[in-house]
Image (cartoon, rainbow, N blue to C red; front, side, top):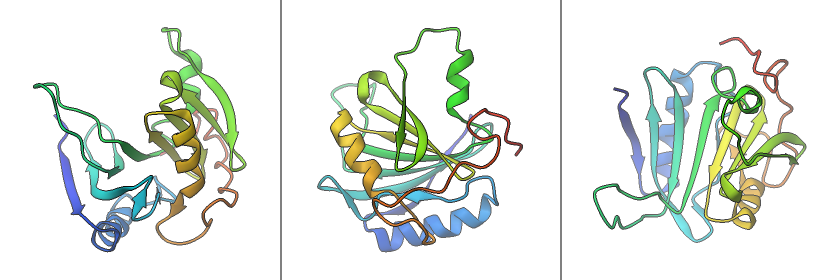
Length: 173
């Protein structure tokens, strides 16, 4: 089983700084590592998590939730950043299950809206950025606030073009 390791809690200074350190451990597989800042839609950055093992990604968790039962709950906003060599929107082209997928372009890069407008996946650089929120309008606003931890594309500016082969799912790790 893959473990989630907490990299930082409460406050972008701590969480963001630890995420930068995590970025260096992932090498060039995730480049750039995007997040949405200290707060998103009124929700503070409460954790930065890394899943490692059979899959690798970094997750920025915004806000808290109150589970109603043993199944847990999803945070109000989450931004995951995956290596594009492991996750790309091309995966959905060969899915045997019919998906409610809408191709789109956001900030100059290709993407897909899924799950009834509660998930947005963007191909940028060597990364696949996955945003989870409760509405399409919120996804759009969050996508506008994405920025790399190490500088580069600022809020609202065009995101880096996907690396060659990323969109088609042919990027090597």
